[in-house]
Every structure is written in C-alpha cells, then in structure tokens.
Length: 373
Ligand code: GLY
Image 1 (cartoon, rainbow, N blue to C red):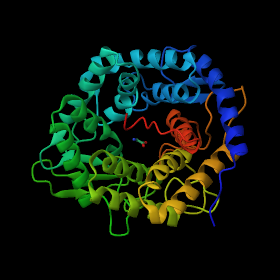
Image 2 (spheres, protein in one colour; image 1 turned 180 degrees about the horizontal axis):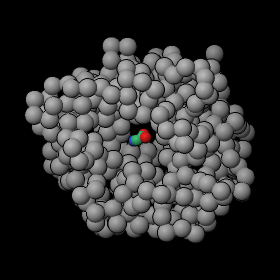
Image 3 (tube, rainbow, N blue to C red; image 1 turned 120 degrees about the vertical axis):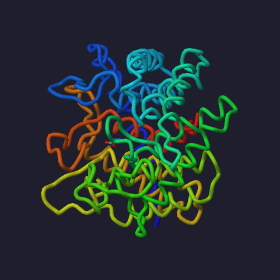
Image 4 (spheres, helix red, strand yellow; image 1 turned 60 degrees about the vertical axis):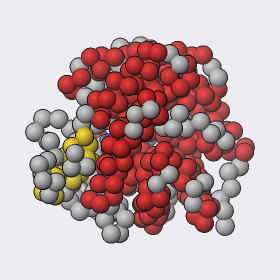
C-alpha cells in the first residue's frame, strides 16, 4: 500500500525549512569560507577553497531561490559562486569532484541568469574534468601518485560533461562521460548490485590491482553513500543520454539499496557494518531519496515502491533528524564522512541539506533538476 504525502505535513516541513534557511545564510555571511559543517553554533570549513563540497552551498541557495523566489538566496548563490574562483585559480589541486563544485553552482547560475562569467567557470571545470580521462575508460579520481584510482562518486560528476557537450555542441565531453559510466558498470557494480567505493587500475593496462575499503566498513563491503551516488548517478546518466544500460543499472542498484536499508529508514554508514556501534549517514538517505524520486518516473512498475521509499526517508530525516532551532546553522543531523574516521560521524554536512531540500522540492512538485539544467 502506497505511503501518501500529506500536503499538510509537506507544508509544515517546508515552513520549517524556510524559517531556518535565512538564519543559515546570515551565519554563512559571518565567514569568509563556504559552509561545510556546523560546530558550536557556527558554520565551519577547515578545508579551504578547493574542498569538494563547496558547490553544494550555492546549489542549496539556488534551490531555495527556486522554491521561494526570494532574492537573498540568489545573492547568496552569487556570493558562494564567486568565492569558488579561488579553486579554479589553483587548478593543479582540482580533482574529479568538479561536477559537485561547478555543475550545480556556476552551471545552474548560467542556466538561470545567462551570466557569461558563470558559463566560463563551468566550461573551465568541464575541460579540467575531461582532462582527467584515462583512455582505458575511466576518469581518475584523485591527484598525486593515484593515477589509476577511480571511485563510484564520479558517477555523480558526469552531468558536468553531458552539460558541456550540450552547451558547446562538441560530443567529446559526453563520450568521455559514457566511457566512464560503461567502465564503472563493468568494474564497480558487483553481481549482487552492490558497488565498490574504489577500484585501483593499472593506469597503463587497465588491469584491476585492488578494491580497497574506501569510506565504507571493510574491503568488499557496501558503503551506503557510494550506493546512493551510483543510484542517482546512473539515473542522471540515463536522463542525459537515454542509454538503457544506465537505467537498468540504476534500477538494480536502487533495488539493492531498498533491500538493505534499515527499517527506520535512516541508512547505516555501510550496509555490511555490525549492529554496534550506532553509525548512521543521512547524507546517503538524502541522495538516495532524491535519486529515487527521479527513478520513480522512469520505471513505471517500481514507481510506487521508489516513491514510497523516498518519502519514508525524507520523513525520517525531517521528523527525527532535522535541527529546526536557531541555535546552530545546518538542518540535517546524523551525516557521516567515513566509517573509519569516528570524528566524522553524526555531524551536519552542507550536501546533506542540499539533497534533502532537493528531495523536498521534488515532493512539492518542482521539476527543475539542478543536475539537468
Ligand atoms: N565524494 C566523497 C564522499 O561522498 O564522501
């Protein structure tokens, strides 16, 4: 039986979001860095301009602008986008997360405003991401001596490349993205539809050298957020290309996510972790919920199941994990960086808020998807 979205409940949660977000913006303006997490009543970001989550702050502001039409969010999105120029200047530090950083910040700005500066920022990022392609078929993730490292998260950065082909008319960006997505299906998605976080390839021969633990519980386990990146990432690759294998993979990955999620709808950090200690990651839930709301429209026979699951996750987040106080900025609690680093457990994270608000807006009927604009 379908879980229904009560318009009253949805309205109440949206009212809480619109009451909290101006305070979050005000607290952000106290800083000269882009918010990452909150501590002692303040936003903090110890990682600087090139940090992979920085694009989620202007993206969240754009989502709020889309949802409310209020100018403070446009202004905050523009402020955040301009702050990220420091990352473009230090281009040698850029990595595979350019889609997170620029597709949903300057890319969305360009879609909404046609500002030529936003176009240049986003195109520059796309060229840098395309430049990370190893012709064996994958986009390298990180820098230094990790030439053969590829990670599942990159699936969610591919919209930057699809976007660049659409804007320039040059298919190379899309072809690189599709080669990476095909290679990811071949090497990351296991027969049971769970995903590796990291696969290390020989950068010369493409031989698989190792599949280390990454941010999950153990080598061979199933990092929940990685599964969510795959779920939404393959869905977006399908929406950009229409290629059936991406939809089929998104569906298998989603079904595995739903088979393994805990009954209270707040994901563990890893599907294979022991019962104790208590270790949750609401970011995984927010990403998966937003992805499932897209997938529900693409897979008619699973539409109800995907929508119900998304709604259950959003309800769990809003009713049990939302910080609606004005004591500290940030909304979604119980987000976690990695299983290994306990200091990263159960904090707020700007991208958790971004995907949570994105999912809420979809439930409210918004059809503007920041990964597709
Ligand atoms: N992209 C890194 C993470 O999901 O933590």
